[in-house]
Length: 58
Length: 381
Image (cartoon, rainbow over all chains, first blue to last red; front, top):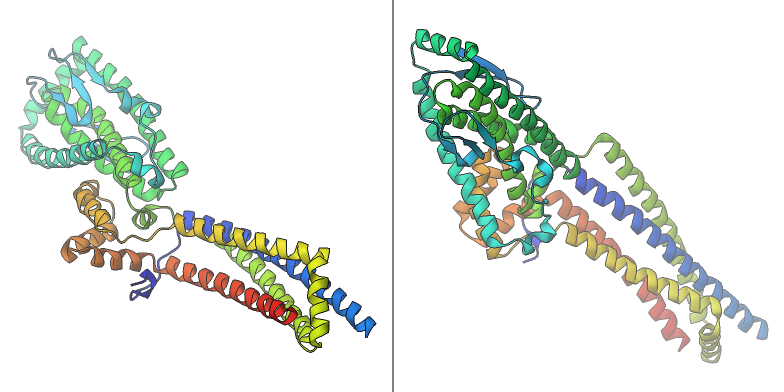
């Protein structure tokens, strides 16, 4: 059984270490999401360029 | 007559130390104070006076490297110390029943005799070192390891009382007052050292209970980080929608044009770079999550259950909070890894929710991205 499938009581208060870890995680994840956004942007631009080429031929 | 000494910066109250007739000196192993056979000198172990000479505190990640014998020895000594403290407490109650006149006479003798003055001066010097050493260890546990400062004070104070009782019993007679003072600080150090050792070997989910709570400033920074990430995610979703729109256009091309589109994309430098950037980010994302998960492991194995039961009495001896004790009692009563798992997971519920949320989010993002790319590739093919 997955740990998270267990019945859960009241939430625990975050500790100092946990909070720092979450801040670190959130910040790192935000940077990665922005990196992914950049990658998607490039894909969109490339796709639009190729579409324009095809449409101009037609 | 009672002599009163302050127990230093970590204690709110003073210890009242009774004095009585001098008897044969003893050695108090459990507090690392050695009193010479003549009763004229006291040696305190360097490890108590100089916290720098203590073994470095092992982290959970290092716990596997700790030899079992060393850990067992620590646990055993704490358990023995706890038993002795209880015995000493009963004896101290008897000592306090001595007639006031006898105690007054002995105290006067101590204060006026050169030998008594010399011994007390030596003890006071040791006491000053111990106060400094204990204070530094408390600071180290609080600042470097983030244990809750209130908890550290409590552990030190319990040690002070136990050590003070030990010192009184060991010294007897006029040494009693002074050795109680040194003993109390040695006891505090002993308790803190024991705490440091035991806490370092606790599983992460239990250690979290002992750590300092998040400050308002940290909560604010966390909210800010979450807000920034939410903005990035909004942009991310908009970009994914835009990419889907472009791919929809590709889907409406003729098969020949789709073929041409695929060949164009294959040689398009932006498409190549975009794919590499996404692939790299994907890998980093997975690594980031794995590291985060590793930082807050959930426990389930029977081996760890055994460890909990082993350290339970030690935690009790040190008086580390009702929550932890309750958890240990439940584990022992439950008698199985399943119950332990449930209890520990319940304790980490909030973190579990966060982990789940992040896991799902990462999974969804990756899945959606892969679906779009797959559709695009299929259409292009």
